[in-house]
Length: 359
Ligand code: UD1
Image (cartoon, rainbow, N blue to C red; front, side):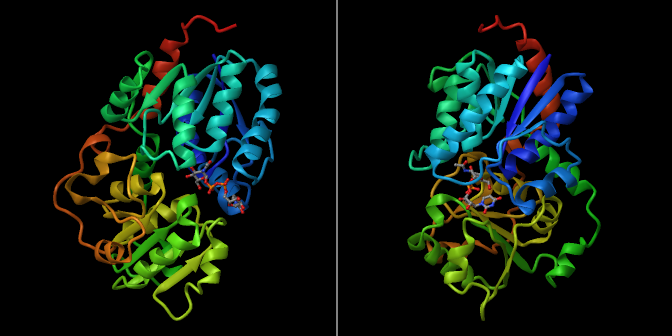
């Protein structure tokens, strides 16, 4: 069996790192394409180094552009590669423009599409990610869903076949990394942080990087009763600078931080505030309460017991929730699932390999 994986943005490197290892263990040939959606060293290369990933066979170098231009350019550059490599499967991850481009090219080339993290919905079509998820799920041939909620959603949309409940690659990797953390990770010293005495914030969603939403979020962060470390996504940097974040307030800005340091910081924070899908999950796995800077979440299980709280861009709710104590109730749903997601995906791929060829 031969698979072609399409990645392009930070969370996809993390997920692909885990699955690639399992594919290799089963002797499945993998060819990886990096679209270049994320291209800075600290947004891309550092993940390959830390997670000891094989360099991509193809770099598309698409870079940043509007949604249509970025997705279209990815498709234009990906199509001849899919034709030349002729894989049994194209594997796409999550909900980015790289996911959409990979799924559409493969489906139109009559190559089977496997979607990892299928079935998630925010029910907010103003999010570009929601459009990417819906379209990808409806052209995919195999759907790897993290839990029963996602399976039920696909069922409601009429997707019944080749849906596999497998758990979550990001949760598995975060658990692995957490188990190996030193008692006091050096990244705390770099920023002079005391364990459980600071909050960690990340903001990059399109809707939160507009002045009207970013300004009240910042007001909420500034009202938190402790220091806030804020690694700034390139999309967010101009706004953070325009509002003078980190000058005479409780906020410390940094460049985007590598994966292992982010896991360590989430473990030692007393609260994580984020609009990222992946960080919401990682914070909880690290045992740290999360405050989501959105009005909805795809990870509905995270809300159980108050582990994750939705605060939108409301300063009051952000300040009230951001450094609250951890709940005592155990986590449920996908957070209680056994590790082994990558093995389950590979086994299902091998089983589904008997699908009749689309050619
Ligand atoms: C993308 C995904 C989002 C995912 C996120 C992870 C879509 C629609 N969104 O959002 O689902 O959660 O990645 O971070 O696919 N930039 C740089 N250097 C880089 C990368 C980006 O400067 O290495 C800048 C560019 O100016 C770009 C902006 O950041 O315009 C945003 O990048 P973009 O690729 O549009 O998506 P993200 O916001 O990162």
